[in-house]
Image (tube, rainbow, N blue to C red):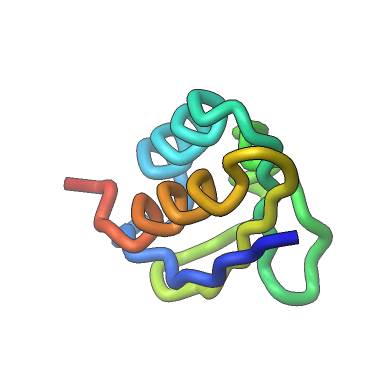
Length: 88
């Protein structure tokens, strides 16, 4: 199962607008992706409540994982998204 680990770049972390943009992109990609913070259970990347429940602030390292066709490409796209400040 491919994985990517990336630091959350948004000033507000994965809250409000950044979380919404991340969840929307995960849904658009159509590949089942999970996101987790070390020590916590993974949640579906398409679940707004799940993503918010991670409590990821700026600089938090999150790990994305996916399976199936297009998994690596989906992870690359989502990791690139999280590495940008989505508050701008």
